[in-house]
Image (cartoon, rainbow, N blue to C red; front, side, top):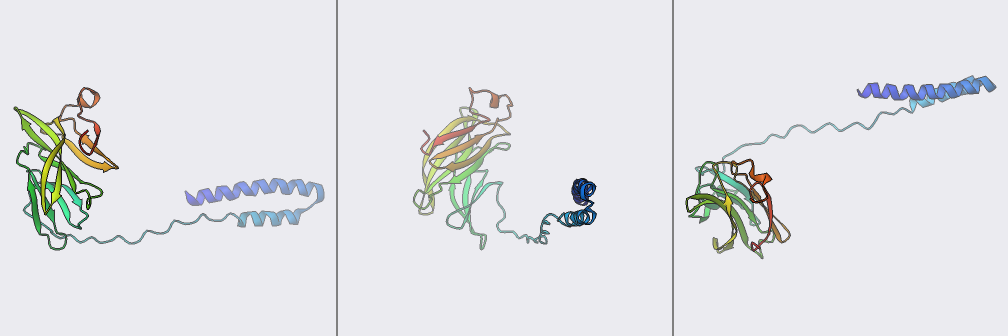
Length: 219
């Protein structure tokens, strides 16, 4: 394709110059100057800059950092240079990337892990060193109904405490519970699943299948 495009471009220039040459030849018999113009035009059809050849593929070594975990769901790189992790059964832990040491921070006792549900998304406050908030989303049972909520914890002395509910009573199910979290400025964005009911995203009477935006205190 590249060669064809180059030939077509040069050919177009050739015929354009040839017409000019014929006119000049008819008027003043300037055959040789016209011929020189054709030569110069063809030589001016430069090749486009070639795309650099990609470097050779990088080999990635695989090694086990930590094992015997129970369904890790969210994995974050923390400002303390440790890996922060949720497990669907309710554990929030940190993993040392140098030696794989897993340190349990907190176990959420009201997590109800059914099907694809359990402890899911997590996000750390962008200014974690001065505002040590940890937000998590998880499924729970209430009066026989399966639900989801987002809770904010405060990290202090290696533990998570002072739980504050940001949003609760979100419908949950065995599938499609969401739930990713991200903080932008002073807002938290929450993605909710349809809980297995594909009609909910189109229904403004439910907050399922939506992207929610709340203040960091839940308002």
